[in-house]
Image (cartoon, rainbow, N blue to C red; front, side, top):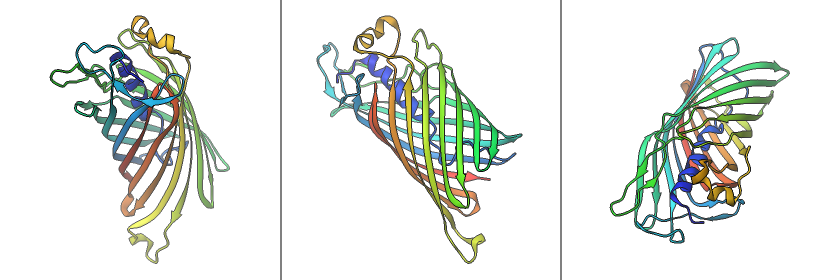
Length: 318
């Protein structure tokens, strides 16, 4: 599938930023932290895609036209790579409220066999407030409001001498707000949990470009293996949680090839849908520290990348 510069920019805005928006934290769920308690994670992630799911959901190779004067049918294979360092924080405010902060620094590049177009900078950020309204018989439910803050540069471009500048946005240039409902259940005394979430995100206009609203969802579960030790207070590894999630995004607008070809005239970007899986392992060490590892793979979608992401993070809970 040949990707023109404007359409390529739109797709990167849609799928890369959505990877940060859909919840991916192990065991977050509907639970909230007690007052003055917190969970923090400092992580590194790497995403790569050389294929794309087009508007009809068919998978095909990414191709771009980086040569001056190249026609629409002139394309060469390309891939998109993004590394990031992110900070995630949950803090208990008391009265069943919890504050969430999420931000990242990005290193993004668009690669061909002979050139690499690169940019770097801070990405978009999020601030959320969660309220636990129900907690009974091991069932927990919460409502959360998340504000998306346009701290990333939506006009960032990668440059190579003699080639056409390639748009590689670090943000979408818009404020947005999402309303999310959580439902979780623990199975004590068995160390098992399940969670599900569903949200509606209201997206605003960005420089005349109108994004369609979307609905992120997730289902996840996990099992915690407690490690027995004669001196548990001195054990360097307390337990291991094995978890897996299925996450997705549902568009509120339906775009076909005709609509996409008219994006430059209408200022409307194609809507995106995807489904991915995320298995992971969380190691909890002594003194409240941990190591969180996960892998994300894009199973299906439309107007989205067909790639994968690795993530490794250091956690601290208190």
